[in-house]
Image 1 (cartoon, rainbow over the protein chains, first blue to last red):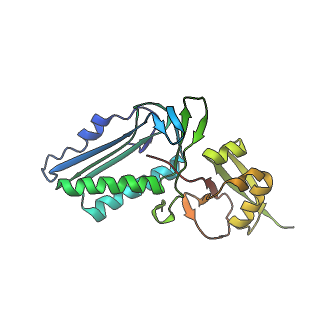
Image 2 (image 1 turned 180 degrees about the horizontal axis):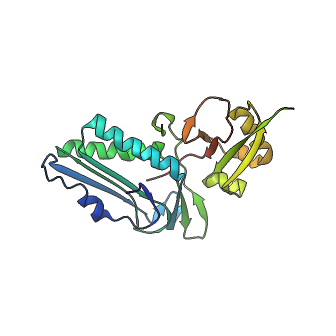
Image 3 (image 1 turned 135 degrees about the vertical axis):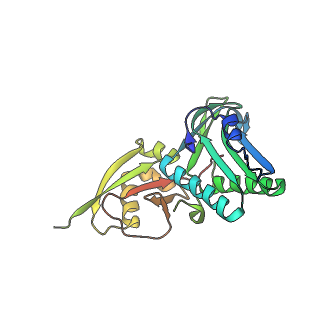
Length: 147
Length: 84
């Protein structure tokens, strides 16, 4: 499955892909991020996401590979949607299965932070007053960049 | 005569709002560095100077140093990111 998609994210499909018939995973954590109705500049009506897709794909693959290798999880899938999203639409999904729940929660949170620091994706708020404004972001972290 | 190389430029988000185009091919002198390229871009798009904290990637790798560009390198100007 691609990491960057333009259509609705199929959360159930991602959840099913975490199934571990060998029973090595006692925990699966699925995080979904969705479009919120408020931002720093006021009420939000829609959100527009764009990505440097080639670099984002490479960076997300690198994060997944690192998580599998370094953090001992059994399965992982990260999917980010781009394009114009409505309130409540899911923009990102992170799914992780691992032997124990504590590490699954912790690693999921770490991976979300890595996405926000290293994956070239931008979002623009469409505000209720008609103004469109790019969301203030974080300077991309070279140490987490694709390589 | 100094020969030139071609650089494929990619622009995103606030940067694309300034350039008004998502990509273009620029010709620069052989042995030009990322710093030389930025000088060219600032001349072509003066408003880019207002964009703070731009990062540069070369062929999908973040570049922090002033390195020499090669023919057909893909260079992107990346504003601060906001995925998630």
